[in-house]
Length: 193
Image (cartoon, rainbow, N blue to C red; front, side):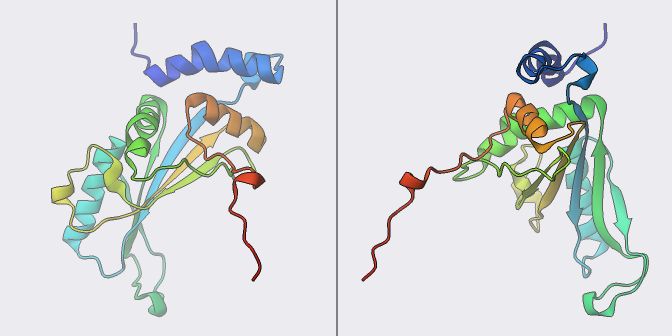
């Protein structure tokens, strides 16, 4: 028997029946699912080969697979870009690697953010979710002593959901810690002088 990641098992055993019941799907193939997770980070134009190698190494540790180095297509003087210069680093996760990364993101990385109050609940209009992390050292695979320069990370979670509501409900059932909107009565009152 092949290995099934724990989050995928949760999806198949609990989330699919819950969505079928709440949304009234007639077929289990209508239920939204995760397709892939894209990780992306930018690299400064003045970065040397050692910095690029360090960023690629750290990205490989976070993702569990080797990243692709993205290069510029043409020269842009205002940004100090030359043609074919490394400007970014990206990874696309599918299958078991996607499920394992998503589990680590939800259970380990996001809760370690200082003063964490949840992530924004806005999706992109097509059922996909974009999350920006300002410091990639929240992942346990990264040792802070080896980091010379902190980098941010863009995480895109692509689903088959047709609407934002479906995508939001799917991610909420996975345990995505969405920020709660404050009721108007909880906001501080201001008095005019």
